[in-house]
Amino acid sequence: MKDLKIKVLGIGNGGQNMVDYLYLNNKCKNIDFVVINSDEKGLKQAKTRNKYVLSGEYYSDDNESLGCGGDPKVGKEYALKHINIIREIAGKPDVIFLIAGFGGGCGTGATPVIAEMFKEQGIKTIAIVTKPFAFESPSRLEIATSETQISISPKFPDRMERATEGIKKLQSYVEKYIVVDNQSLLDIFQPGTTLAESWNYVNRKVAEEFYRAINNL
Image (cartoon, rainbow, N blue to C red):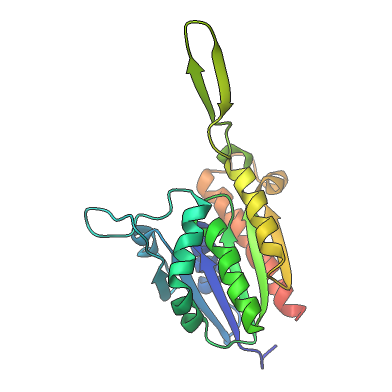
C-alpha cells in the first residue's frame, strides 16, 4: 500500500462532498485528492485543495459555470470537452478512484467518460458511486389537458433512473465499481436525523468502502 501512488477524483457536487470528507479525514500520505465540478460556485466551497472547473456553455451573470442542469448528456459533453486536461490532472498513478453521486448531471454524465479514458490508458480504475435517496426522486409527470381528455406522461427520467443508467454505462470501463445505495442507509439512521446528518452518513459509508478497497489492493 505505501508504495502505491493513488489519485482520487471527486466528480460533480456529490463527488465533491464525499471527497472533501475523505480529504479532511485522510489516513494515508500517498493519496492525491482532486475535485472536478461543473458548478463553479459550489466548487469554490470545496475543502479539497486541488480543484478544476468542468465548464461548458452556461454561465451566470458573474461569469461562473452554472453546471449541467441535472442532465447527464450535458455532463458527458463537458467531460469530453475537458478530457485532455483531466488526463493531465490525473497524471500516471498506479490506481485511480472515481467518486461521484449518480442521479444528477455532472457526476452521472462525466464519470463514465473519464473512466473510459483511463481504461484506454491502462490505469487501474475503481469507482465508488452513490444511488439517490427515494426522496430525491419524486415522480415527475407532465399533465396535458384538453376539453375531452387528460393525458399523463413522464416528463423526464427521475434521479434513480438516471443513476441506474449511468452505472450501466460505467461498469464496463472500470476494474471494480462499488455502489452505495443511499436509501439502504436509512436503517441505521438515528431518530430525528436531519438532512445534513443524512449526507454525513453517506460520506462515512463511502469512506468505509474507500479504505476497504485500498486495503484489498
